[in-house]
Length: 225
Image 1: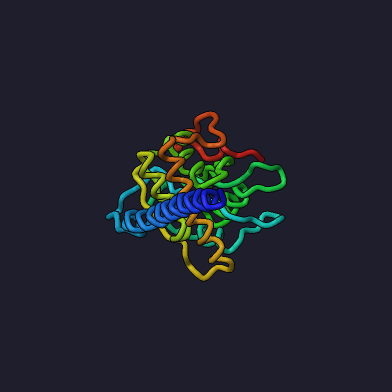
Image 2: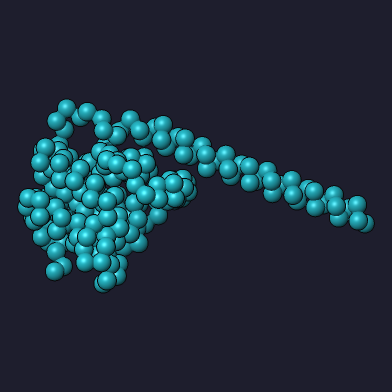
């Protein structure tokens, strides 16, 4: 009887180990594929191509509206692209799900404070994730082409989502310095890439959609203050 129990336990253990190994290989494969396939769309020369919008992905802001270094670099790169004529519209997309935490107004204020017209800056108040931000650029703002701005480690996934959703998209890296805590972000990104493969395959809807706000209009239509 004990031998049978030990034999069953070995079988169960073997099956679990095989499943874990397959899962690990799948996760590694997703990450290798994503970085290899979508790296060619980062900082690629588009010969003066203009986009419907420059999509700047959100990151941490401080109490009082100050932007973190990682977000500052994203904003600076997006503003640089705006004045270079890459697009005449900017979408700042981030988390504004709570009254006391507001990435997008801080992002818009930063852009306007550096000379971008207020009407050219659209706020996506429901960019709760990279997936939501990219899908809403198409579904809410009506973009058909976007230049996505974020740090390089993050761009592979953003471009995977965008191109899988039919957006003509390229990326501009905002990796302008070394950032504290990057190892943790890299680990989270490893898992997020796998998660968003599932989101694309199963056509997951963003947390919130809402009324359409045409990118051809005025960004002030998104003002809430």
